Image 1: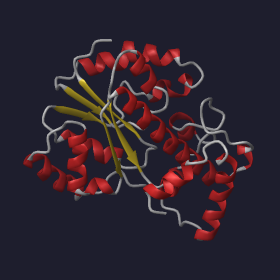
Image 2: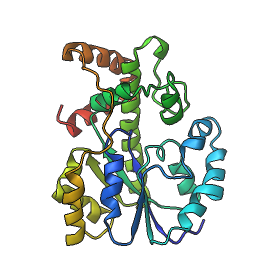
Image 3: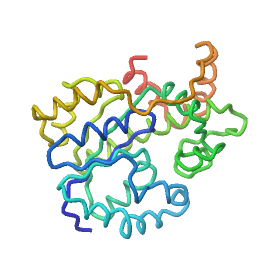
Length: 262
């Protein structure tokens, strides 16, 4: 499919600075950045898990025509939903979007989701926005029904980490530009300017000034705050999840420990 724009999407679990990133990218000349805009991937995300053809229809008839109407030559969308069944159809349609791997420690992601009441397979928000163990093509989690809400959120964060690795390898094989950053690293101009360079975007003085201004703000905080249990209890809960998925992805834990210096 011909689309005369440079496209950029994120691979991210959510609760990791995607709204913040969208604001930072909006300062780049010639770039139109959105955070979960209409037509929103969420309208079909749940259905495409079991019927991928719906993703092609959504892209052709809704998302790509909307992007084509944007006046700027570069379009970036920082939704956490693109990596849940839309990247492969884009590639099959002939598109080669740049990918930003926006990451955050799985423990922090899981706790933030729990505070929001966004639980895979158990709450309306979780059902609409998150992958869940009964979806196809995800990390198997036998006996997930007996696990706690936190453990399900932690599993979800690990699933997105797995997808970061998978899409990074896919993008490399196809020559798609990529950049990786954590939510905390977005505050660092040197790291953010390298992200721009990796995506062939200009890191001008005006962009740097905007970065300083935007980074001084607090973005999309959780209104409800919960006190995290003792770390020993949290670690024990996470260990049960690791024990159930380790033989499916034996190198995932090592990669996560290295990325977040755990």
